[in-house]
Image 1 (cartoon, helix red, strand yellow):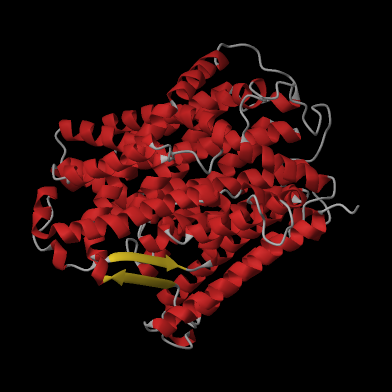
Image 2 (cartoon, rainbow, N blue to C red):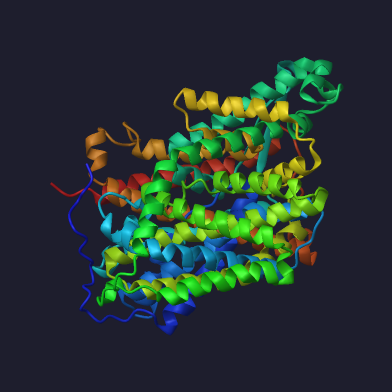
Length: 636
């Protein structure tokens, strides 16, 4: 039942507390760079990102309050606002810009910076008129799960709670695991088995701290759904196409597909089925959001009725002239600046879709949070409509596909930043921050993250190859496939339709179609290992937690347990991703072979050597959760 009590901020409007300080901006910018790099790597690897809000808030408190012995709750809030912009911009850029590489184009670092900064600021500015309605007037109606949780962490830290030890411990553990495995090459990071007698049915796992952490954060339900999608693809569809053999030509596949290995069957057939499923799942998510769209548009129109702004500190946004003028200048820049390569029609489509989906994104975040908002579904919708419009205008081939991708990139980055801004403004409303300060902070974080976006992308591409087994870039690959297919008129519609049908069938059985579709689209070594983190979550939070005599007793320490394990899991992801970028630097510099202690091969022994370190990490993660539960239980 929603709480309809009025919002009472932690820091009252009449209080004067340090907020937008130099140290807060510098620390926030540093964390924006770090979390942006983490999510760039994560999005290229598994097509998912994780929220940086709570980890950045805890790290901010550790530095400002723990090391510098100063810093207010509102300074910590500014730090987390700037930092979270980095991971949001990374998601929008990585989901779309690598598609230009797949199309044979090479965007420069300056072009990526300009695209990220412009689109991000568009999203932030367009969200500002919705601030009062979404975060204040609808308090209690929209839960803002992540924004509310972050506010609670900040308030607890101001009162003397919330320890940063779990997130630092996770970073160290994740980095050490990656150094030993991928850096020194003491073991492989993937196990994969394909059974010929079962028509090449396959299963595999990439065993890393990242998947343990992400699996825990998304929980056992979503991890199970993604695993189900992966098993449908690799244990059902691959054998299906293998059995069909020459008859697979009905799906537009080569006659000799049955002679190919499992991974090649996946590349030529199953990934298109997954693409159709993702597109359908995105559309379903969009249709479900239609009531939210309508309500948000009404809210936006009512917020622009010209009424006088409140004089209270906690109700002051950036001036309307700055918002409207800024949007106008950025929109003109999309058309007039040559680096965007956009015609007037392209720029108009980009701005129109951005406005529409910014409204949607801001509302959806209020309902389900930033992690679960369907950025991909909204971007795919914009991409397909734009590609068809460009095709009808007479542009075809790589030129038309690239134009559609650029519009989609503007939309993706804008809605990612708008969703993040919506969440951050809710956190600010709860702690008593000044809205215009947070809006400036979001713009700073966007600009800083945009400076880094191209550099990280090029580094990872040179080291591992974007689109390779190491960094498959599933979201961007899907964007490139759809855009090129529309332009060339050769999309494998029967395979795409099969995927769409599977996604709708999943919905009919009450299974969330979008995570199911993503699991179907990803390589099995990416979609399957998330269940291991989900299993850890189930063991610690399920009806019969390990090491406990009853669920009731386990529940006594549950809030503290979830907070500590969320920080630990986020640290594992950050440590693995940051060290993965470090290993990429070794590869590019030519030093990777010099630091390697061995060259792992294949076979049963190598599989055991790969599984044992991960099993140890898994056990330590669960044991940590048990210890937190026992120490947080009140004495009787």
